[in-house]
Length: 352
Ligand code: DX5
Ligand code: ZN
Image (cartoon, rainbow, N blue to C red; front, side):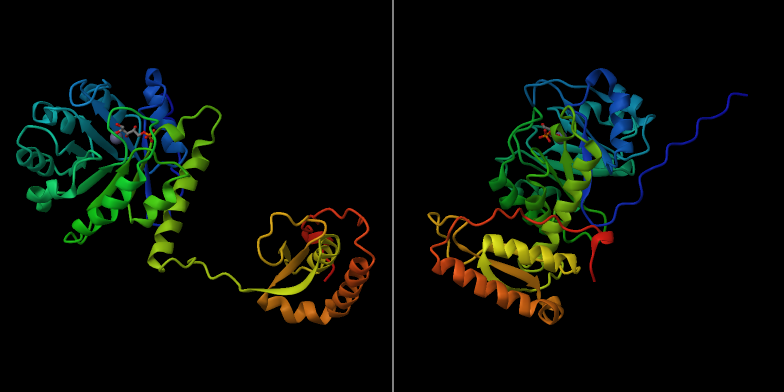
């Protein structure tokens, strides 16, 4: 009896709200089975399949047979994005192929409602996608039938195009609100130009699913890291937006502990960091592009919660350095010794 291969372990369940759908449009089309398995093992939440007919968009990809073949290669949900003029002709084949959702375009010149009903009758999620120039109001006749609204932030047809931020701002949050009559399940997908550079904006607009294509297949890029970054940045954007534009993770207030020329600020910074208190230095005062970094003052900042402990140990040292700085200025700022930025200490090097 041949031994059955162990089922691949799925990545640990994702926390947060944003989901990443991996579009395989820019993968190696000669090895799509490998592409979907790789996207799965790298942590994608679902697979986005771009079907094009050379008519609705000026490009051709694949049809239901390919989708059916891929169905056997992954346990992730398959989202079919049909950029085709006559989805009614092929809808049964796509449903038979095992798509978990089917999204068609609202701009097609065929009756849309029967297609959406057909998808839902098969127990799959039904979606409508909007080209960048199509307003949300085009969805109005179909509102009660929608499980997915897909906002396109590039013109459909090709991967690797630039993200249209204005389209996202105009439509993504509005689409989320448009689906608010559905208590569960309805999703806003955003498709086109999403990467670590745009995910925070899209997440801040409450997108549920971020479709990521070309950014995953760049040679030499760590796909898993890109997926995690997109998800985390989208969640950060969402939390930030919910919190009225204040960073959601409480960040300790910083206080200025000393103001010194750079070589002395770095000296004190290193000494304080070795006691286990994080310390940062920033240029002091208003922005002055003429001021030389070696001559200007630098503020040494500490977390407010550590100020007392730092004062106990370093107040005398700070006062000594302030006096040293005054003497150095009085002497006409002779070239100071070069003090490199301190490297944060390792736990074993702390001097508590
Ligand atoms: C474009 C497709 C997108 C595309 C996204 O017509 O609908 O799904 O693959 O690719 P990127 O992320 O490269 O814009
Ligand atoms: Zn797509």
